[in-house]
Length: 148
Image 1 (tube, rainbow, N blue to C red):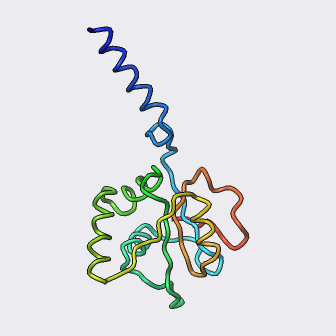
Image 2 (image 1 turned 135 degrees about the horizontal axis):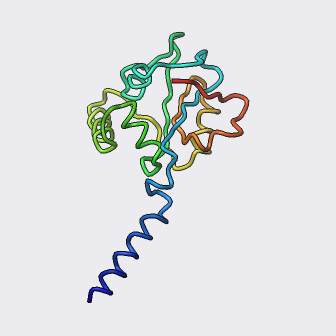
Image 3 (image 1 turned 30 degrees about the horizontal axis):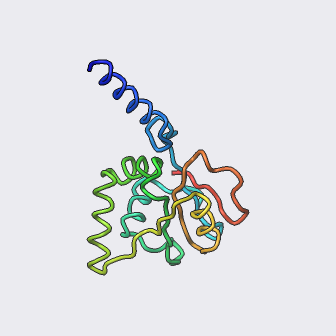
């Protein structure tokens, strides 16, 4: 009986470690990218938070900001929400559901892969995206990383 319990425990521990979405697989970082048409090289944490809360809708030039991010399945988004938004991913999603149904704003576009976010930012002038920092190589010429 004890051996069986021990084997089950080992199985679950290995499953957790080998899961690509586990905490061990995440590099715990994210990057902010924008379309090159955006005349910004850095953005402070509060401005980034206001953009992703839908409170800041335009860049300084008056151009409408198009927000995007990876799905909450990606651990870098969980880190972004925790560090920048200062809430849990559940609270962030709930916030946007309420805001969307009240008709007060449009939530960020959500994509499953980094390439999809990069394609969106590349094709939409004045757009911004949150991606995994480890997948930041080889950005198209019309997409740039900004500091925060």
